[in-house]
Image (cartoon, rainbow, N blue to C red; front, side, top):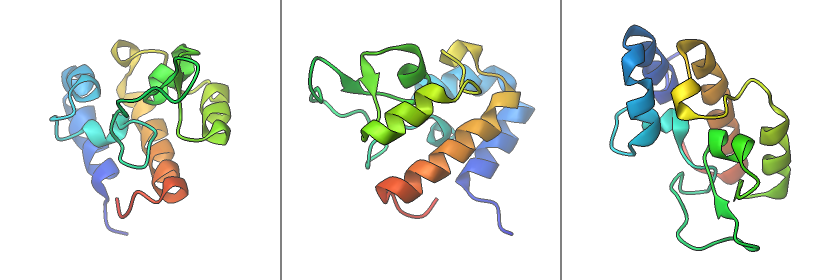
Length: 115
């Protein structure tokens, strides 16, 4: 089976764990795909989605009631997944497969296209 962008990002960040926070915080980082926002575009949506809430990434959704996923179902499932760390700075190489699993799920469920 061919490696997808998530597999390649995991390999890169496992070899260079000091890059994890940079990849989490910068949309320009080649491995940011693991930390994309939970929206059809994978980017932050500029408009609040209601009640002052905004679309967030996996860690933001887990850590804050002010950040949500594109759907209520995704928000609920992400918040229930204790494997997701609560911040980018707490993310280790061991967490990366969890991020990849979620991004693949989000790709399928929100029709984000080929990984």
